[in-house]
Length: 269
Image 1: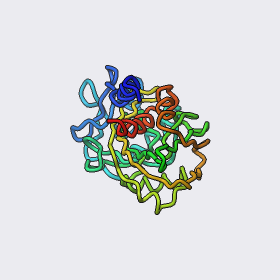
Image 2 (image 1 turned 180 degrees about the horizontal axis):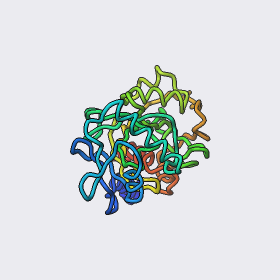
Image 3 (image 1 turned 90 degrees about the horizontal axis):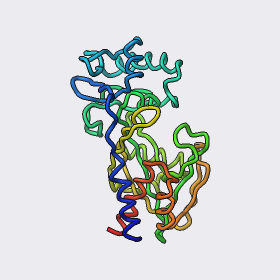
């Protein structure tokens, strides 16, 4: 790997967490910021029935006394109304945990909420990504199905998925390995965590703010992935050089690129 390539890959990690544009309105719970809303969406949320109210001149807050299932139910009712107006790009009927503070695994859980609403409210989510490596030093990667609501057709890690409400990273790992690549539990259980990245950037449907739990899985030479949930179009097994080239050509999703870069740089640093 040339020094120029190494620097370009390092920039992908350095720019994974980017400052948000001015004007985003913070969403607070118990005095702690848990999200941020663009002004047009914030105005619509304040006008709608629900658990969110104005917090001073420059923010919003969860109404005091609401938490757990009571908050989930009240917030879900607001989401259903806003969903009918087209505010959410993807609706998955799957909940993520809304957490306080850093929103990592040790942070207190506030409630659970439909994952498709997280970007609009700027809530921090968590996901698991897997670098799957062969004995001869290649990596298995996947191409996202054209039907995916986010980044259709882009290259991705072999396994990657959001942590559903109540899951620990190891739970998500086993579930996503089975669904996305047909990896048996006994093989998936051999994966080991290698890094945690923090992605944050503005997207056209809100703020993408997510902890990325990176795992490494060494697969046998005979391994062949098999998609089971319809979310993958095809698989490829690529060398480190081809992987770097495709990342720098912009073929990968931003998060998947950063995850793969952790392995590429580990090999040379």
